[in-house]
Image 1: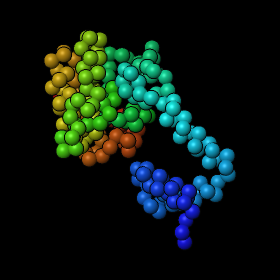
Image 2: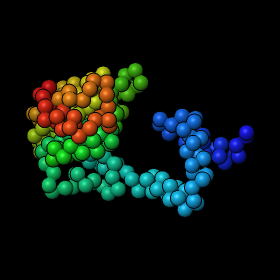
Image 3: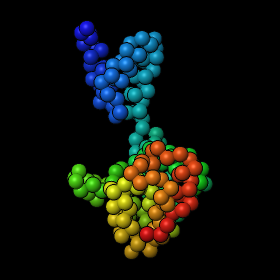
Image 4: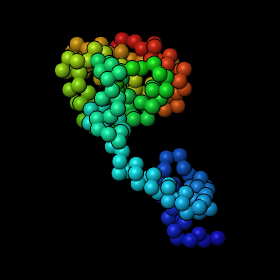
Length: 198
């Protein structure tokens, strides 16, 4: 059975989403087709809102709808303690543990020479600027325990040490080869407690 052209286009666009294959995309497209028009409009509006209103914090690079973000402007957060993560979704995982009271710095990736990602492609310069003014006591490197995450942590540690800041790495309560996005609260909490000097 040939699908109508608008439905084919919707399936194609849904397939472009991470983790959505051809069958899942088709199932989602038919779901959208079956739902009331108002629900489909709300979905379209939510997608439009994300693209129009969500941006990156000019201080820490986390996603936000106000700049600077709520973490960077909060009077209850310890501005002298920065946790460095790879991606914005990693911040949410750490926050679930309710253990960390500092601020964040999002690198927007990791060093990956094989994929052409070098230091200039990440938000490293802005991290060094934040630390260089002397208002930071400790930087926690919470990159994923992958080859790229480890290489990035070591690279950052070498850059940060001469600036006189304490540089720690989260403990490996997170399985090697895993992603922070999939860690539960207990694992993330243990990893933060067991961080070590680099």
